[in-house]
Length: 483
Image (cartoon, rainbow, N blue to C red; front, side, top):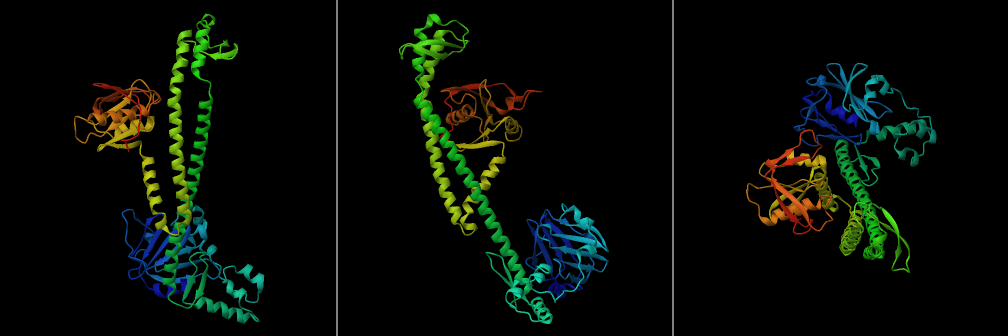
């Protein structure tokens, strides 16, 4: 490659040298340009591949060589490197050492700058440290030859018998004089051949390498994420099924309430527990837990109320399990599609969904929509504050479950002063659902315009004071018609 470049570049002037990103470097020689892309640190070359345009994030590179001309482009025998020497005395060295690849600027022996700044040790090299000016020992044979010169094409040892050092030397010269390469797009094994143009072949190789490697990386990432999601959902279903089984097999709380009522004379105020006769099991002893702040009758009523809530809790768990099983089936189908994808088109929908989810995860709120109105729900204390400060306007409507910790909710007003009642109730249901009172049948929700909500000075994040507020009594929920 360096030999071919020397034929083209010698005498050309540097018009520009810049980068568009930490991974892209461009040397513009007017009628010819070299672009280097670093993919996971490995350097890939493109020659006259496309116009060397600058992005808005471009940065000048190696200004010392701008305006100077190339006097020499020299390959380094038995090294993965080459250098370009300029008329003003500076030298660019291309160090192609796998993930440690870099482009370095030297003034005589001293490294004065380098492109990949995190490779700090590269500045400690002297120019001569990276060049082995030596001749090849063609008298070596077999494993000794391969060990000494591991960069040689495997065909030299595997397919060519050598009866003399001259034969080996001529074979090496033949390979170095070839005009092109061919490669397997799956294994990326490069083979020399004498067809086509070497630099065009390298362009083709680099483009295919980037396309194929990025596809397999993205496919593996999506596959791993899908497996993790399947594990998480399976564990969620298992845990909820155990909870459902426990709930169904639990002794009815109403029986405990009746046991308390049958033993009222034994229960004194302030007790946290007491051993009573079990009227349902031949008056055997049973330990009954009590709330010390309640009297005996109130404790019994507490157990009766808990029993009334059991069917609702069972329905909630069954609904959770059903939805989770549906999601699990979708994830298994997604896993199968990802496994069978052969190109980016097969992953396109998943990539788009992942990017959308990733973008939403960075926002400090959950977004809902109801009858054309956007509703934002804070995720935690920090996000509640950001929601108020940066994502709401003074005439938006603010809602919060009364006298309990929970999410701040904002209805975007769309310039309207009066909100439809169903929109207000839907948002209030969200405020109730994303609060500590979400398991209650009805929750009181406070609402007012955003301009009447003020942060309490010195208080924790999310703590506010409210004026001109009104209240709604709503059932917690985020199901349809919210999306």
